[in-house]
Image 1 (cartoon, rainbow, N blue to C red):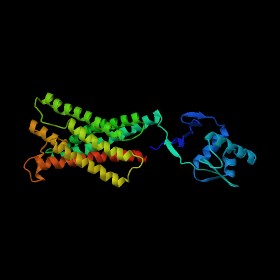
Image 2 (spheres, helix red, strand yellow; image 1 turned 90 degrees about the vertical axis):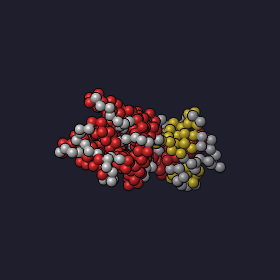
Image 3 (tube, rainbow, N blue to C red; image 1 turned 135 degrees about the vertical axis):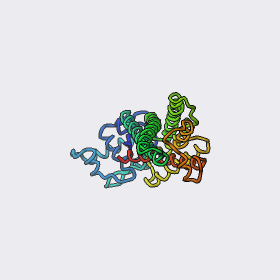
Image 4 (cartoon, helix red, strand yellow; image 1 turned 90 degrees about the horizontal axis):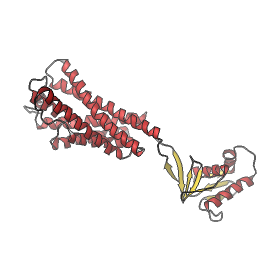
Length: 339
């Protein structure tokens, strides 16, 4: 997702390569077409000698001209830049060889076109949606295998249901990031705010569907399940990981994966400390409320020496789910960036 540079700055001047215009303090400076090409050649090779032969080949493109034509071109450029041949700030003469551009040049990134921004934003949203779905399927299969009391159908059903929830979370966070990219024109720190907003929306919707929906269908009051707080924390962690991946100066893949995993672990820890619940805690709340289900989360608690799905099981599953989800989002975005 790299961008081309359209303009460069030196001193009080801007050389707009896209519009083929030299500006000083925002005001246009008139230059002929060949003189503009000569200045662009000098600026593109700032600090290096540009030989007379290169000027003839790249500016006049083989058209026979005398050295006086080049001398007149440089004289005109110096006049446009307010430069002095005896004490140059911009164009230095290298006798018998050519010329050198002396000023420090700053490159300005060209803004993304609306179409390209839309394309990038759409791909980011899609990558996060797929990543969230995969993380959800993995989590559902895990709980179905360890806590299910039925046959393999329990694993399939949980994988499908939780995969749908993961899709919802990934899509909401991805859409938040995409909106930030479309607004800002680049993947900067605003993607974190976008991901937080998406996470909050996913948490609110998930809470409504899970708690109120099951309550309406069964008449049972479901305990606390994943909601706004959990969505906010996971969104912040996923957004930060996504921003680190999408940056132009991103770290190597292995380091990014480690950072993403740590961010997910911390998110899970904060959710647990704040009294929140992710998938494991929500499933246990469902089991307690409905009683007669194909789930027995106590089997997971037993892995930690607990008779129920106790505090240690809550913490272990929360940090594990956070790590898997954030790592999945970061991996999806990394694959997108490499394509």
